[in-house]
Image (cartoon, rainbow, N blue to C red):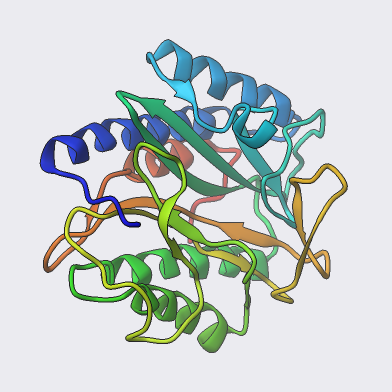
Length: 266
């Protein structure tokens, strides 16, 4: 059942969403070749706790870390580890926080150094598709309108693989609420969007096949063909006429641009 939020609840959710944005901004400042994903996770955990919140992901169904850090062909739910990032890597960082009784949950994909042109294009198109989906996230539309907009831009227009097994979701006092928000579907189908609904829209787009598999750790999801995957995610409140994006990429993008180790010219 969908849980609609009132104005006060939406503002509390904005605080949680913006704390995720701030966490990702801190990550953008320190990313460079040679850094381990474990050290990134440690920074995120400390930053969330220093700001009076709890990492949503830690111990969620037994998940052992504060963030999901997915490199290259890892789609989502990558375990932070001793792996050192190198020039040309792409890294999706997904963070959740719990504060004032509400969750924030969103993600950003960074490029270390200058990746190959086809990888840059995948990042660009996936990010564009997120905003195509957000354009449709208005009261009176349906979930299928968001899904179609993302699939149209990524799969139909550019031939990329849209992951089917993993989807966006409602967000609130629980990290995963109804409805599910897939990145593929038909216009005019699915749940009707109502004012006050908060959803996480999160295209997960593969350069090659849409097929994925889960590693033996039970969490790490990889592309079936070993080609790169990109993940962007915003927390979005449904309103009449235009969605209210609760999270904010502007400080992340500013930090990304200021970090000479990251490629942001796309």
